[in-house]
Length: 575
Image (cartoon, rainbow, N blue to C red; front, side):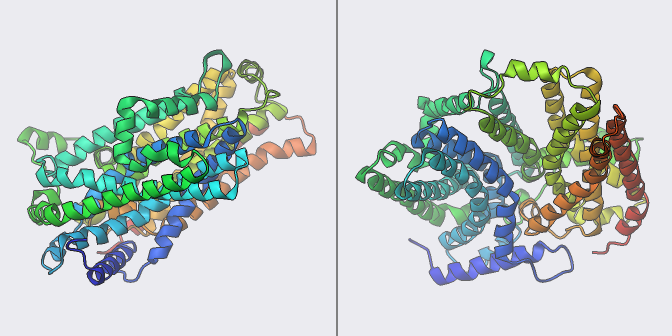
């Protein structure tokens, strides 16, 4: 490859990895969690989603879904993830990172630099992309395919992962080189944030509504057929094949016999063509693209405000409102934060619901949707029915609370700006509660609305509906606030770009911590609800109401700590 030097590539790649490992540990600390830890943490973070996709694929395979259909669904999901989570990360890593100016001063070719940074970017994205592979593996297991088919599917999917990530950089490179949009990072962030938000909402809507099939109720096969139909439309097909060239040879690859080998070789050839094309274009355009941005307006925000806007911003309002508005703006306007901290909390319940639907479909012995609604309409808070509803709601809250680790990054999102608050008469209690309220509104709010709609569709009695919704809100809010306090004790304030924070290698520890917090928060309320059933005591609705009261007490106690000792800890953090 022209302009590529293997020795320089290894040295640059090692330097980039070590630099990010140090950044993961915050300000004033050296060392790191290691490159392997970053990959392991990402794989573990998405392990539960991968397990649910495996179950969903297994059910669809047992229902007779073809391997070509499973492959196309996997590629569509892969492209959607890459567009919503990977594009801005690629642009930020390759063009906006703080070490660009340093590399420009070195006698290193643009091709070598772009491939070193691309390899670093792909190391994290591949772990995310591989979470989709279990869906195809589940279909393989459901169909009872032989070992050769398994090898073909894995190789084809890996080639698709590489091709999609290379294609994203091929799209980003000319945009950064020739478009004036990227010359202003603020404007680029706002435009991409709006596009990614609309795209993400469309995915959630299509996934949710596509599983409903008229009188037949919820049907995952209908959703799979709908997504397959979208991927087969002429215009969409061309777009998907441009973003993932191996998709064009899916029919040949899964045709069976020697055609499968030819298909895989063809996929490898198409991916290699994209790699060569990226090498050529990066050698010509990469330096030109980043040289004009190094130290310029595109490397940092440079928003300008009118006098009226400044007067409104510093007008008479409480510190809570001021910090709340800043927190919401951070989450909505910065794509890296939106993808990592908001989009994950939106898509996780949708993927979980879709996978759960696939597990409930395929058996003629199962109850119909109308029968389920009729049963739900008779359920009250008394006795066994109340505990069953409480347990199901707690299970849903538990899965959502696994994402409470995003709240641990709330303080870290301010970066070095946090130390500006130290020079002001800042009320850190209002600061923490504003952080909590902002992420709850933007991240948890839509999920709570969807849960309310689901309860209304099922036809739960009003009192039961309100009690279950209150349990979900209190359980998630308690876990989230506790996670926020824990994260505030050791914030990462030394990141140079948003992508460094959102791709931190400590995700494994934070996820495990969220798991423990979820169990601790919900253990006592669930015990309060189940003990009367175990001892045979008929206490009516009191066990469920007691569980709600315990959650209220837990939340108030943690809130008191957030406004007291936690604020004193924040005031002691030094640069």
